Image 1 (cartoon, rainbow, N blue to C red):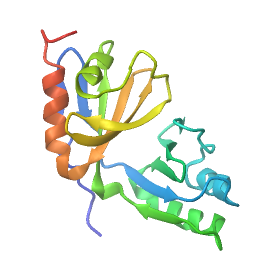
Image 2: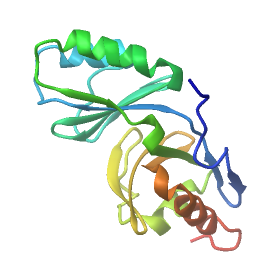
Image 3: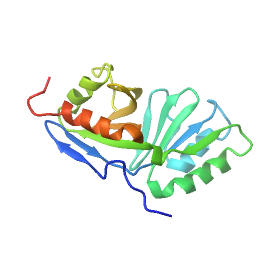
Image 4: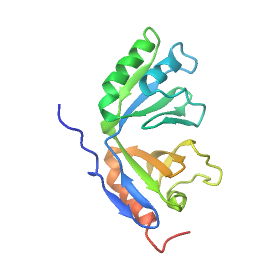
Length: 182
């Protein structure tokens, strides 16, 4: 097996906020109806995290479980552990209707950090950042492309399709240019 390669080779930018590509990151899309027997156990076995409430991202160190829609969860974990996590999900949900897919290589992941990180995000997404709570997950857009992001104490994690990683990096970098603060 070849070594994983991030979309942009760890690109970064230092402006009034810091932008970093942080891949490769392990990601699993888990589709299952809410309340499915074994769903909570599957998430716990795969990530160690609790079943997230609506619009929430549950995190534990380098692992997370996020609510993407009523029947979709995003599981985040170290890249090397995805196969083990998929096996754990299959075991916990055996006999239950579900779909668990490794989407790690189809995504790019960025961090936007610093005291003014929210200003970068405000420029690119139609979200009310005044009401976006810590640990809240949003599916929205970054200018013209689909994106998901969540806030923590240090800033934001932004996930997009790998095919638009260069565009998103340029967008985030341009939005963090010194002198363009809101």
